[in-house]
Image (cartoon, rainbow, N blue to C red):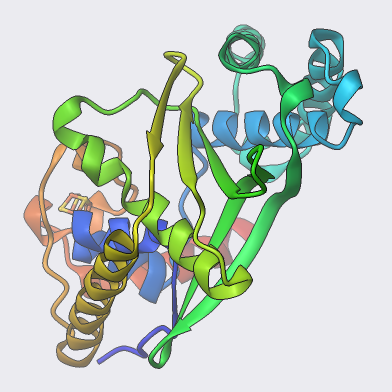
Length: 272
Ligand code: SF4
């Protein structure tokens, strides 16, 4: 029996549907996970773009973006998400190069001097029944008619057509939050895939927002049930290869009930 969480974000909904067992480790037991190169690179590039948009529109040049990236790199040099990667000199060089490629690609995708942003890294929350849905919007802006546009930067690959709808799940989540917080449904939600230069644009509808709440309630019920019964089923997939909890996963011969105690002991030994 576990305490039922009271908030849910798009990434948590995805985490539960991908593998309830991994969700138990990360979101219910809150076991720490070592940083990953892809995640840290993504956060750093998001930060560089956030810094770019703090400049007045006419000053958002390639040079300004380069400066923003340099600032973000300097900020991350002592950040545990970066130091925890334990990269060697060559790997750091590659890491920085990859960040530069992503920000260079960004400039090929849109002209930042024309963006009318009204919010950056915006934290929004809205209730659905007893649950609070939370999300962070990378960028909220206005279109030429004053409608809201949500932009989400992605630093991984664009999904294949087969998985495109799944990747838009988070998008409808943001549309729902805007609807609740600002009383206005966005006219468009854009996913900018900086690696490949592709942009996927979705137009949220009353139906898609309703579907989001129905789906979230269903996921929520499943989380609640799992917390009460203690049954978080492992679901094997390609994600197992990079799963930090594999050694406690029953699918790999582990015992999930030892995870919390063993993690606490490892942390204790690390501080001795
Ligand atoms: S190893 Fe795979 S099945 Fe096991 S918890 Fe991790 S993601 Fe889930």
